Image (tube, rainbow, N blue to C red; front, side, top):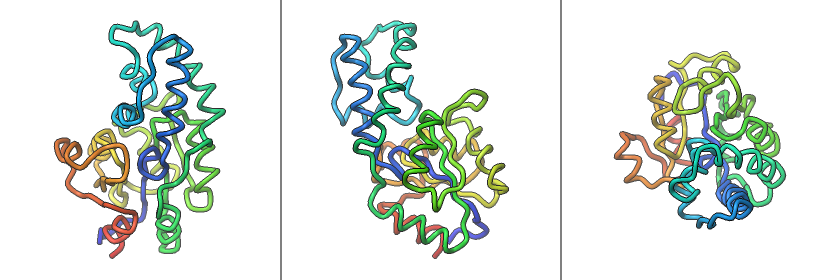
Length: 218
């Protein structure tokens, strides 16, 4: 049990939502539009987590100029905004986890490097009854692993960092928690494997949402 915790900050992609299929489809759409070879699902599993521009840089052929990547971004956003609900679904056990945490009185937020409009739309679609604050990439707030989105979420929830825990699936999430000076639970059903997370310094792991509940509450 984590004493003194009142607030849970969740990552989105790979933590509460399985977004990999829709993200992959949107990036491949853009690659095809720009006459570049498409990538596979397992490649994208390693690319996502640090913002879409980073994912595009990983996906395009080596040597692609930054200005071309910048030109690709609006096409991705347009396609993804139209298709972000095609296959995206909560991971098994996540709604039940949030429901139990809500009944216990915990406050919850989602922070993501995904576009802010998509974060809010997806939260409204899947988690509105549990999660009061959802923050994505937008002007004026630095992307994770900077602590800005976490700080903003805590401010909106009226919580202090001393009473918060962060839950994510990637090295970016672990670094975000470190930079925010809050503990991190690294989940193992998302976009990264345990070995990669251990190399980054992660020490608390959950194989399923029930284990997350046990770590925080029991």
